[in-house]
Image 1 (tube, rainbow over the protein chains, first blue to last red):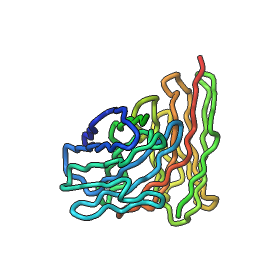
Image 2 (cartoon, each protein chain N blue to C red):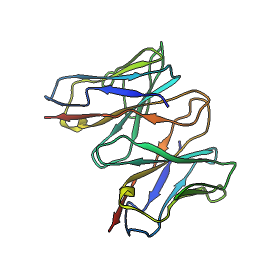
Image 3 (cartoon, helix red, strand yellow):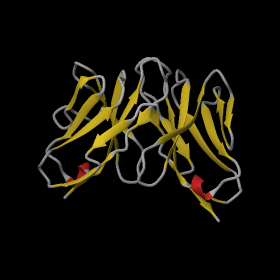
Image 4 (cartoon, chains in turn green, brown):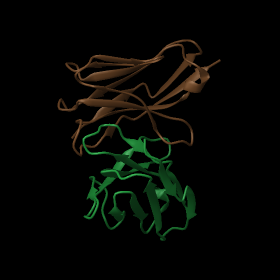
Length: 114
Length: 113
């Protein structure tokens, strides 16, 4: 399976600031996703990162708050904008090849907002 | 959209006993059902999956069963070991294409010595 890395692995940020999380894959993949996992909770899909076009957001998530880029088939970024303590979560990128079912997760970014 | 319910939320077993986690789904079009294990501070790892064309799949001490009629599927872990202690998530989706996974709420499994 592909090797997935995320930067940063963790960060502590001040309220009102923004953080950009990077997801890098060692091979080209068709589909990349961004998930949020709040403390003690399940995985919630934020959006599907589409290569060369705007991301597809799930209900409850908007582009102004979580802008996503995907300039190529191996890289994507998620920005958490104008952060508040409620944004404290683990953010995970995930990938799957179109036509395949198996989905893999990156190591996650643990974000704490003070 | 799809809704996946998972029970129990916590499960404590003695080492060597079996553990069973159950999930139900709402969308009859779903046909792919993976299970993920997440150890503390780690990423979710796929441990087994099943497609709707089979009723059961086994991999060593882990098995998954699927009842399409009742729209539920279960994870069975036999001869549990302390390293099985983790949070387990079930998920459901329509296989292929760009269909997204919908996750259950998770089960915290603790295997006690």
